[in-house]
Image (cartoon, rainbow, N blue to C red; front, side, top):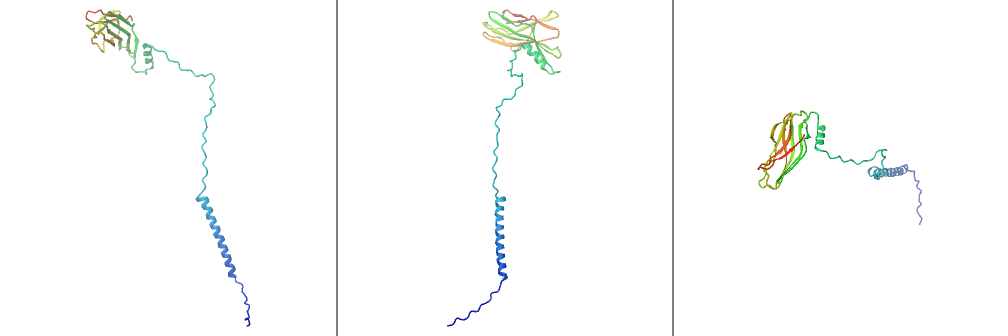
Length: 224
């Protein structure tokens, strides 16, 4: 049996086939480029890597001693000495503002102590208080202590003074004001401050404590 003769068919050249391959290759290349650009953009801008924080540096206190001024030394304050009532009154007068009413006190006579078998009287810190701006309003003050030791009938608390003007006694018994003038029973003690206003040009000479009940008077001369 004879094989039918095969006729050679001439294959023609196709331009479309080559162009299509180039398009496919180009499309794949562009796709890879776009995908790579997207990944890089997301990594850099959308999810940036956080930068490490800087730790704050705390400066340690310097142990170098501070420079001192030559010739200057630390000196402990010296305690001020105790002042008498007259000195304190003088300081208050100096510290007061100009034009303000200033009341000053000056000593007037000596302290006194009178003791009897039944009672004791003590005169302390006799003084004159006055308005320094006018020198017109004057007041005598004295701290008075009275103690009834053994008098069952009790004692009265009455204090008077003799008033002197131009060297002459013009009032024999001027009563001093007492915050508490009650009678003292046996064993009782009273500590108070007596006062007496003085007019211009007058002074005090003698203080007289009169306990009553025919008891002796406790007299004290101020001797200003």
